[in-house]
Length: 346
Image (tube, rainbow, N blue to C red):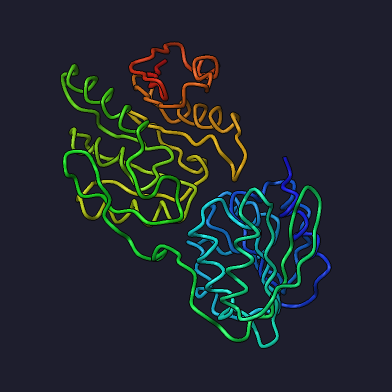
């Protein structure tokens, strides 16, 4: 489904001939992206690798990083941003906008009422030292235009750029940061998968060889698989903050393997003895069950014939039906009121 807020900004971009930066995350789907008219003065910044690949393929200058405007090494006449799902990212972008604008440059922020846009606008007004020019779009969309000049106190972005240690099972040291799903906690679904993985490995004659952590986040499943004896781990994610955090954890735990930015392992062509996956089921503020099918399909492509995949999903996801299209053996290994772990094999 096309995001109305982002489509509004894309329409504005297509009317511009000045140096323009569009900041986008998971809201930017392929249909909206294709509506953009590539020109030399347009730059797209995204923390999503799939957006970066799609933009590049359509001749749109795109930078893939963890929402760091300073890495662009230039200033813009116009910066457009449709608010993200995570508050820390929104505050981080607002805080950076003035330094990335030319003199008399304009920052445009948009979002919906149920996403907290009214509060974001109020906070930005205090920080930018001016009242916003506010207009309305469809379905309670609000668009705020700013010309920042007298900066006040920066918004709390939870020290966005900094890695911090989070609580983990068994007092294992794990580092994470804002900008990725569940960044400041250990996901209960992943922990349930780890329990199933422990039992499975203890029943085997030897631990798994090569493991693929599909949608790795900050690398919890990779770390636990390594501690259970995995020989080598390849971790991949679509999100720049996840890649940054996971690489730190690989270094800290001396994990043999690699952390790769990719869209659901699309450019990874090897097969593995084991695939571990806690797939997302949200795109921005919307729920998309197709994401689960995408990850299950990728797991089947990347698993050796003799291999085993473990996937954890929320109880309401019909994983058994989805997996039946790609695997012969489907067993629910563990479940509770919220999650279920399935073991998949050919």
